[in-house]
Amino acid sequence: MLQTLLFILTVIKMTDCEILNPGAPNNFSIKVLENFTGEAGLCIRVFCSFTFPQSVSDPIRRTWFKGDPQNPAVEDANYFRNVGFSHNEKDCSFLLNHLVQGESDGEYRLKLEWGKGNVYIFPQTVNITVKELTQKPPIKVPLLTEGDEAQITCKVPGNCIKPLADIVWTGIDGKTSRGVRGVPGQEEHFSILTFHPKPEHHNTNLTCSVALQGRTWTESTVILKVRYAPKILNSSRCFVWGDELSCMCVSSGVPLPQIYWPILNSTAKHCRAVSTENNISISNISIPALRNINASIECVSKNLIGTTKMEIQVHNRVEKPKESWSLSTPWIFFTLSVVLNVIFASCLTVILWKREKPTKPKDKDHVYMTAMKREESVYETIKMSSERS
Image (cartoon, rainbow, N blue to C red; front, side, top):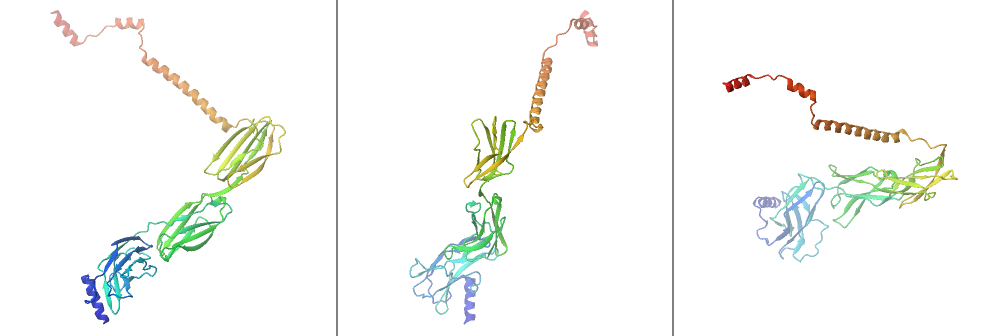
């Protein structure tokens, strides 16, 4: 009996016949798309439904195969439910998981089995094509603040069941764990990186690499932005030149901090510079004719995260130092350049003016030129002789 069944199946495969038993019903129908495309390491969901005659009784076993009907490629998927179908209609959807380029490609067909040896194979085929993996693992980064515990997630591409995926984090040390969320059949598998952000983590590259089935790699990289309270740097200074106080306060923070001077008054000169790349704010003040100068001057720096203060030690100088060569050099070169350009322009103007102005011959030159004996050419002598004759 088994050999006979195998023979019949082989004949059906060769003749593309739909039904095995001659006396069995043949009014079956199927609704399914013909072509599906997936990426290596991921999965393909094929949505399908079929109708069957009333003479066919449950249970009906559904098997998707590729090539030999005796070698099932996908069994009936348990997570699909027969909800919303009529009494003679059933679901035949399936999930083709862990796609391998060159192996999972091909034509798939549906085989039905019921009762005692009843078999029906649909002539329609579903063409599966597997391409190279192009999807990247999405990385979700929350708002990062210094000192607050943060969890960054990296999701495996696709929403496949139990993906064969290894996830590796590079760029930051922290505690990692795996998680799953979503409904059955639509799960999201992801990795969680838990750490406490620090100022040095700001502008750091964080990479999540995913290996599917141990042979297909994909990765994504993000640049972390960490908010932290201002920190006044030790490069801040205060000096007294005679009766003038000059101070500089340097502060680093994200967002860029503001700098305030409680000692600042209406006569003080104040300027501010920022470096967005280095997250640094610099504030300079100069207060003339200041008496009763304290031993230190307070600098206050503030942003959305916090406020910090620093007492900057005042250093006395007997006299105001001369301007440094590095500061005066540009002005010296600029002045010399202007003078040389003016001289060059003046000389050039005189030369051009002399070339364009016509030269009036002198009297002695005129007399000398007219007193010269002009040499007659042979042509002129012949011409004059012909005229006389």
